[in-house]
Image 1 (cartoon, rainbow, N blue to C red):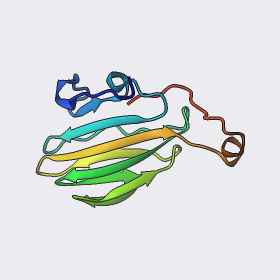
Image 2 (cartoon, rainbow, N blue to C red):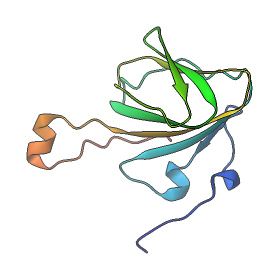
Image 3 (cartoon, rainbow, N blue to C red):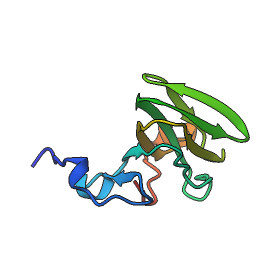
Image 4 (cartoon, rainbow, N blue to C red):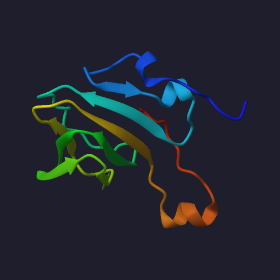
Length: 125
């Protein structure tokens, strides 16, 4: 089959906000997570240095703050932010519910791009 379809609401929620879609979608090179954040919810600070995954956070509903290396990045509906693998990141939700689409993938170095190899080492999300 050339596609896989899931509804994120049918995927078990983790950490009171996250729906990791990579496994149900059977992705090989990209992770996709839906984060429906309750008022006052905060994610755990983390980075992706070990797996070299860059991420893009797209806020699709509400307003929230993404703390990136101690910088508060204020997000409004429609905003997107790219985050390097080694940067620490944390979502801090405000007084109203918000929703993010989080996309992650291994970084591709210039060397990898030239060889055509994809540096995939396992993906959470």
